[in-house]
Image (cartoon, rainbow, N blue to C red; front, side):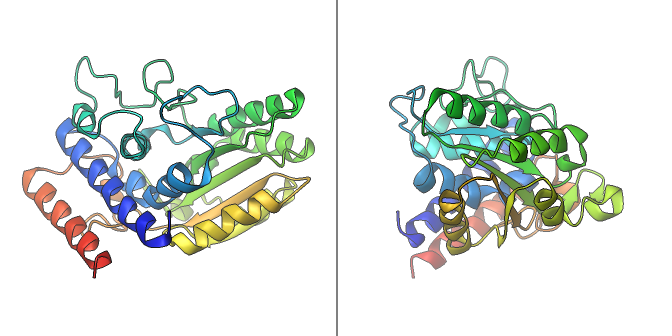
Amino acid sequence: MNKLELQKTAVEVRKGIVSSVHSAKAGHPGGSLSAADIFTYLYFEEMNIDPKDPKKADRDRFVLSKGHTAPGLYSALANRGYFPVEDLLTLRHTGSYLQGHPDMKHIPGVDMSSGSLGQGVSTAVGMALAAKMDGADYRVYTLCGDGEIQEGQIWEAAMFAGHRKLDNLVVIVDNNNLQIDGAIDEVCSPYPIDKKFEAFNFHVINIDGNDMDAIAAAFAEAKATKGMPTAIIAKTVKGKGVSFMENNAGWHGKAPNDAEYETAMEDLKKAGEALCQ
């Protein structure tokens, strides 16, 4: 996909996020929207995957460490063809396979069940180590929240990954600077994030995580990096794409009402139309 196609796809992914959370009357739109460009690039450009064969042995793996942003992952998977886009509207409904957090047993394309914060990097490290031990060439990606990296297990896993030189591992931090209680630097600051990963022997790349060119360059640099894992610190806007949600911690974990939903979808419609000019 070229840059414009990726940007248009990211708008569709954002529409899926807003629609599914509105339909569920619950969920986490803020961090799903901030990471939508990263989800889009991973699933439509970066990863070696096949929606027709979700379990193929040599596929790249993805672990959504911040599992509450499942609406973002689900929307990317649906738009990529893993399951029908209309199924997004069943999010969190009784009997739906699209639960509030990713479930690898029931959702095509989900490589790891997640939701308990702080555990995803450990899982991804295990997958990356398995690839090395098997002589396989698949790559492993994991997306963390910047509030989530206040968890100690993240850094235990980082220490191990750096020590074992897992250059097939990419840890992405969605640095939107907001968590459920407010700004991360006021709740329990993890800054400087880049220096911490460097201390654990990671190759670190700082980018604008809502810029497709920057995302593309970062993943290319990660792939070219040998002998150490990569951490991409992606500075993003929480609630990106929806005017009243942007940089608003209150939209970490609540659903828009009908009027708010209409406003949000209109914002995204205009964003899509602007890309068609």
